[in-house]
Length: 309
Ligand SMILES: [Zn+2]
Image (cartoon, rainbow, N blue to C red; front, side, top):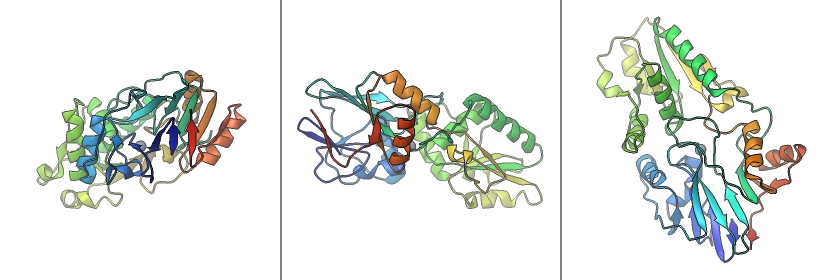
């Protein structure tokens, strides 16, 4: 928890004693405050996605005058929190963020600051995702090569990654079949002006042609009834994630397509903000801080409680 003047703010957590709970975006590991906080700060889209995905209606409040939300480039509605302290210090908390192009999210807003609190998901130089457009092109070529012979099912996080995949496939004139959960979240994207073309499993029970499917379910069971019609035809499985860089995903193919900044992007981001002090936040904060120190930055994990006046 951070304290700015007299205001205590929790960042993507639910912490006792906080005056405000910031929810940067709607991924499940960031929305603990949606359940019973009386003062949530988030974007409208995050509020809508939380309601759709988890059935919770966050008690959202307006932003104090010294705070602003900046786009984070990670998924629909993802925001960073910008705060000015009483003495004029500028503080930014990134949440999950991405500097690369993502058709389903607004591009990141980079603002100057003195103190940066950063997400630590991809904490070291081993996370180098390379050029995203060429990774996407490779993925589409792989799909087109297989689609002549059989069907392809992608496993993807139901919110954010699934919609980004739909959009990438649409650019290649492919409208995927999606699971019910992916479909209901995609409707929130469409409501907010993101153009996505897909169809639901229920509309494809009689489908006998090869298809590309997207499901949040790693065992692909959501597609079993549709797949039963394709007996004897190959079914290829695939996954797209930043963790595909270092882990085997257990699918026929895996692609390094991430909606997060890799380590090089994090360095580039710190430099662009001009921050003099970096606090790392999240599970790998120690590793991330050590790696940033090696690069010459002043960095340490965010303490449990810290006050900026
Ligand atoms: Zn996220």
